[in-house]
Amino acid sequence: MPSRKSFKAEPQQVRLDWDPLGLVAGVDEAGRGPLAGPVVAAAVILDDTRRIAGLADSKALTALQRGRLYDAIREKALCCSVGSASVEEIDRLNILQATMLAMQRAVEGLRLRPAKVLVDGNRLPRLEVLSEAIVGGDAKVEAISAASIIAKVTRDRLLIELDGQFPQYGFAAHKGYGTVEHLEALRLHGPCLHHRRSFAPVAARFAQGERPAGAGRLP
Image: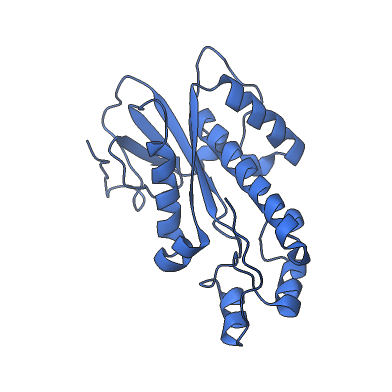
């Protein structure tokens, strides 16, 4: 059954009048705001018999804490799945639709089929299972917290790998976000193939006739 929405609450905030029995998956994303790299989403179904202490919104955790929890989630969750949308898809679809696509891919990649999906935020991807959008869900629902950690750590590791290919941009430090250092690197070196052309600071450099640097791509 497709997702159902009620327009009596916040825009695209789902309110279900009944909850099914069965597995519940939490879904969250990482990387909507950066100027470079893919957007990554994760879906996690936790095991109620194997609790994981310390789950929280990934943004409230240190990199060390996220790394430890990433390992614990991978070990103890019933299943996890990661989906992403490429820079090309972000530029073609826009970042919101690319994020929804990454979430959809994450849910569809789960080894087990959930009876319900809880998504952080106020919008839902197109899913063939009942789903609910929860504003601030990454701080309220353990499964969403776990998904936020998996998505964040996965993307951070991708950007560290990308830093090895394009060290001039400092991706390992800022993970693609528009920091002062990143903007200065864009000014000096122009964009590379992993920069999002549809994002204003990058678009401005392309408008000045900059050619993409390098040809490496993330796996």
